[in-house]
Image (tube, rainbow, N blue to C red):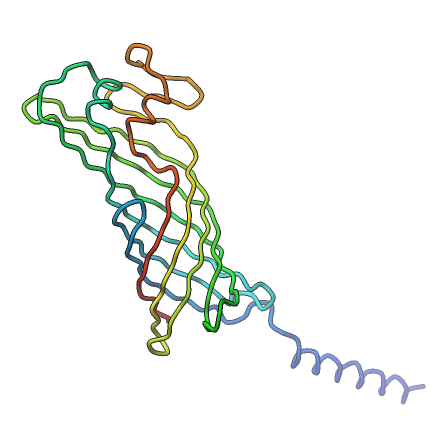
Length: 227
């Protein structure tokens, strides 16, 4: 009986050692990469990003955080002035705009032609739009802002340059949900809860006058660095 107990203990110990040698670790060795992209995003823009991959042996998704900046057309100065400020027409109109955006993407490797590394991306977005309008000689200067949530998807492929660096070509599409447009002491909301609206203007009028993000097609290229 004692011999049987010894044999059972030895077999149990051997099985545990063998399992420890063959079982994958719960967390693999995470890899970190970072890079930048430049190109067309509604206008001229770019972003910097960081990616964490291989953080789990059975989850092929990577996680990417991006910060982007885009120079854009602010909208229609005369319409924006009427809808947000007043009916004056004096001064020479000028406009400029920019967008800050935060992006979270989940990337999944896919097969595309004979390329070694291609990823499908999808995730939420958050943008902060500012449109600046000036009427030179008319003493009228004002900003119109909008903060919006959105969702986007895309595809990217990596072309190796060296073991630690690759060229990235990316294309994608983003959609942003309607959000409050605010300028001076006036605001228009999609739900009709407007603040100090001018005359009988609506959110649709303000939306048509200002070029905040709606649909964005992205074609970009840049470099990725592995650490």
